[in-house]
Amino acid sequence: MTKNRRRRALENQIQLISARLNRQNKRSNKFSKIRLIVFLVGSAIGISTYYLVAVTLGWSLLALTLVVFNVVAYFHRKVERSINQHKIWHDLKSTQLARMNLDWNQLPESGIEPDELHAFEKDLDITGKRSLHRLLDSTVSLDGSNLLRDWLLQATPERESILARQALVKELTPFARFRDKLFLAAKLVSQAQLNGKRLLHFLKQQSYPAILDKILLLSFVLAGVNIALFLLNYFDFIPGYWTVTLAIYFVIYFMNQGPLESMLNESVFIVEELKKFRAILIFLERYKYGSHKKLAELCQPFWGEKNRPSVSLRRLTLVGTAVGLRMNPIFRIFLNMAFPWDFVIAKILHRIKYKTERQLREWLDVLTQLEALNSLANFAYLNPESTFPEIVDASKSQGAVLQATQIGHPLLHDTQRRSNDFTFENLKDIALITGSNMSGKSTFLKTVGVNLSLAYAGGPVLADKLQTAVFRLYTCIQVHDSVTDGFSFFYAEVKRLKHLLDELQHKDKLPLFFLIDEIFKGTNNKERLIGSGAYIKALAGLNGLGAVSTHDLDLTKLEDSVPGLTNYHFREEVVDGKMVFDYKMRSGPCPSTNALKIMKLEGLPVE
Image (cartoon, rainbow, N blue to C red; front, top):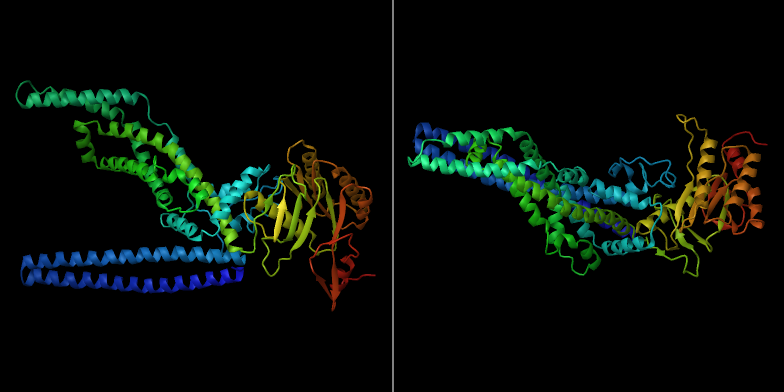
């Protein structure tokens, strides 16, 4: 299926959902009117009959009115639930369409601010307002979103991990209904982003003092003595000694109310938080995975014979119900009078918390991975022209270490995107890219980098073909000065380039893949030429490869003296008094410049 056909299919789905939503809203309005009519008419007839005809008949009619009202309310609630589901479904499909169209205003906000010190996060727009992470992120939990970000920002990618994630993403890509139902299960419970770490924190807290075990034993003994003395007194064998032991029993109980209240109230929070995850966990437990073997293997903790979520969550829910019974002061006294109810529930809660924490940690770990994988699979589904890269072992491969065919930038709209072919034959190659202003040099560097980030996360890339070894990534593209730190633009660039050089000299098993845009653009022409030449010579022969863009055409002469350096360029034409760019990269140095042309076209004085 082509991207346009998939886009039209999404648009049709949105129209169908909107039509159903309109019908359901009309039904809901009808039910509201019927409820009002039943209440007013039934109440009027019932009250009139009570006073004018017969009391019994009046009460009967009022009771009938209440029954009819509740029946109508039941069906009204079903319609309201359906409306809520359709709204979530509509938002999901609308967001999908926005991802296809790069409609940033319709995508969920990203609260992640890029780290300028990261090797490539800010330069490649991995995070931020118009970023790769925001485009991909269809997770429902904070942990899933953070894991996706971590995969995209790996400092040292591992080939085995990449291949394992890639296999799962391939299997999940056509599994759109599974992804949609998982999203729906989560959003029906909570519109807010789920936070599993907070829940695990509360479960892990060891708030059960060891002294409570001894107090529990003592309370059982006292409870038994109380009952025995009460029965002996009831049958007139002994005086009412049970009042003394009961007083001692309650003194012990009230002296330990502090820790008991803290633990039992905490259980209410835990049960409420688990409700948010329950629908997702039960969905994954009961789903029929069929032939999706890798997905079934990943989700095995949910449906294995032992420790199913439904069983463990049921236990915790029962404890929550037991805690709820004591919320009524009268019930609390009654329950604890003959039996140490609070102490027993606290002990049971402690044991269940310990077991549930271990199970939930495993469940949430799998869920977090699944969410991040779903985001990558969703990107592949919405971009049918994307392909999965071949991740080669550089030490064993006899071919090029990086070969891209028609590679394009995923953050550019389909109508704006221009694709190029590119190859690095050897590990120590350097591509020197020259070209005019606005010709596409910076975009090309970002295109290569962002697709490598996608590939190492385990996702697809926007290319007809990409074959690449595993590299560490480092970029110097969007350098900014810092007023607060007192750094000028040039000094900030120097620091960045020094750190890049240090990384190249670092003895790591993975070579460094570097991307440098407009090297030393923060200084004058003469010093830039001298500094750039020396820096490029220093790059040669180190543990890495990469591309450097520049305006300085004199640097193209380095091809004769620097081993592994090859010249490439972008060019432009002036057609009918306008600059025209084809954004195609070609071999060799750039044959022209356009700065004076641009100034002249804009009406500035040029000799």
